[in-house]
Image 1: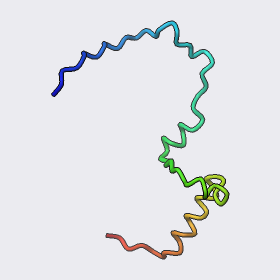
Image 2 (image 1 turned 60 degrees about the vertical axis):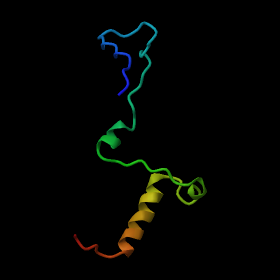
Image 3 (image 1 turned 30 degrees about the vertical axis):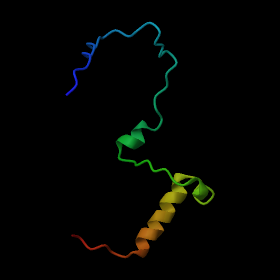
Length: 72
């Protein structure tokens, strides 16, 4: 194992150059905390799936065409 530099101790003070006065809350944070998944689709499919609603609709139709899945 390599001997690396020791990590600096965390301090409770922020550096002066960090300015969060205009920061905004992450508008997607709630959805991801609820279990949303992020998937990147091929750019060629974008014309068919312009938003998450169209992707979800297509996936629901596909899954329903499989019928009931058996439990393992």
